Length: 221
Length: 295
Image 1 (tube, chains in turn orange, cyan):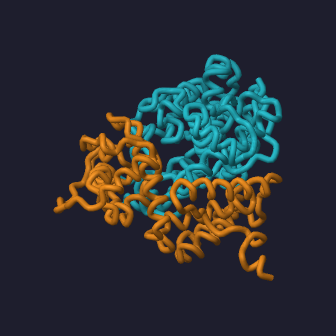
Image 2 (cartoon, chains in turn orange, blue):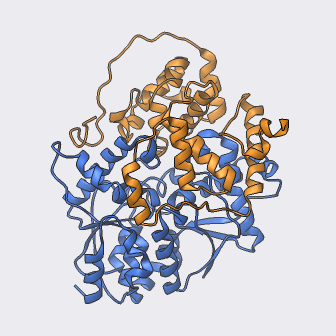
């Protein structure tokens, strides 16, 4: 998308209007409950969309997502590219006159999308999250080289940034040895319990593959 | 002054120069940093995008460790770690259910009473700009600097901000204390795309170009940042970011993007080696030389 500086700062590129019908009323309630944000208070002032840095890149603007949630358009929202293009900059949250934590709503939508597998395995955003958290789960800290390898595996995005590798190494920004925290064991436990907590609240939670020692295959051996 | 220090994963890898320069600067200013023993990742954006309980529990582990080591204040340099630790603390302090859940998951008590501070906050509000100005040995006279704060030090204001959330000035004050000229520009708290760097590189390059070209148009010769992702996206990805603006808008020259700790270190007369200046993709050697000989 060639939107660099062609649009003045703060303008929102027009999106085509469409016919929407009330679909799933339970969706609004679920989003509000899990995010803690009063999405139904949105009166479409578009302040969130105006300040959104990824506005020119997305299929749905944040104000449109708020409206669609209110209309119960679950499929359209959870299958949108927009929820994965959100950079969590929180400009929307900080500027919402109704104090709707829109960034928290986006978090909730990403979790719901992963839960119904709408986003797996192809979406790069969810692949990045899984790769990152898997690294943390295994080492207690992020091990960049391992995380990038996992990301490429999950996303099937094998070739991006490969040309950047020599520069990364030359600048000592990437190491092939993991950084371990001596609390890695404690972190694994915390992951397990956090997943149980979320499961009891939403019926599903998975942040990525679990380390070898705990997988089913091992217990079978 | 003594603080528990939470370096975070970025400072161990992509932002090792931020780690080095923060420690060197704090050493020179008499700020004592003690690493939190066996700290763990704060979870960053992937945790709060994936599991709300985890996003609170991971920071809480570190705050518990700091408390166990006898500290009441934790200092971070990474803006993302700062925001995650602050957010976890905010939730534990304001929501009894969150507090109970965090304690249940970590199996340890925590009441949210460890304060989380960012290095900028400590430099400006604990040490003071006047005190820093007194220690400047190689003033960066005439250097025009754009201060870029980004998202995580500014928003949401009730959780993270120690300065105005739309128009912060603390880093500009430090730039002036270093003898340089603080450029007024409108994109101080705009987003660089952060971790979309990996999953949506094109978006990050577009945002990077907007920031770089605006800083250039405002007359800046360099940009200072206080966040590893801002630095990576604006410096390491700068060649592609500048390319993404080709043919669409005014060309933008290369602009060095330094950590504020590196710029202050130079003004304090610390050698470039001690500040990890060689990690920068766009060299800041000219600035270092000018500081050394006195502009």
